Image (tube, rainbow, N blue to C red; front, side):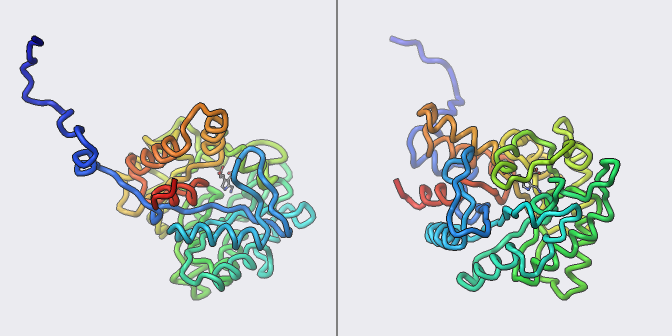
Length: 331
Ligand code: PBG
């Protein structure tokens, strides 16, 4: 006979069946917590992205079909990222505020088909910049802050005018949240929200995204505007600023390798917190899934659950449609 340990506390009692486990589960999530990032281009076909299996630069028809499938499983928010042809790029990214450019046309098409769909647009110059930077590059290589913010304001207003519900500045210039808020309000777009990329790190995990959009910096890196991965107090400083400037959400990016930052940001603000599970996180998981080294459904849902547990309300994830389908009971 085994001698019984004299334990009053046996945490395993709370894990003894699925019903018991479900009754004390601390975090949960569903499609209402997902934003689905989608790549669009001005072509008729969908062009698969090598390092992001299951993702493509979508043409108009492909986009509508993909959104249809996402909406069917309960995804209610999408974020658009445009691939702009090289001959539409210039040093100041003027195409970014062209009222009949790709993004405004795409927003209008989506809102016409699904008036209730929440459409998030990216505010930054990199897809439009011949230098591949989020801001305007001076002859000596510096990224010009205030000159860039002026263009970002025009870009945000053009997106709002096309029907965007939420504009999401991903550029990391100083003061852009306040300036964009003022510009939107001045033009009468007081109802358009701002999802601020508040703590966006100079991360190596954006590689596949830059391949998808052909938007990598032509020279230099993004370290004078995106944050140093070593820092977390600095994230709280950015939160305080974006909050004061009128952000409706604050975002941490990347998500998985930065769960501590998400948790600290969660504690530092009463605003809703978003986190971006970026292209490199998606690529890593898929690489192992394709080799049969990880179970797709379980590792994806676990990665999303971890981001929720850290404190994110909203998750931008390329898995949004598939995860929503699994949560809806699809095999
Ligand atoms: C650029 C932007 C990037 C991403 C979203 N917006 C890349 C970058 O900063 O170079 C990355 C998203 C991803 O990797 O999934 N404004």
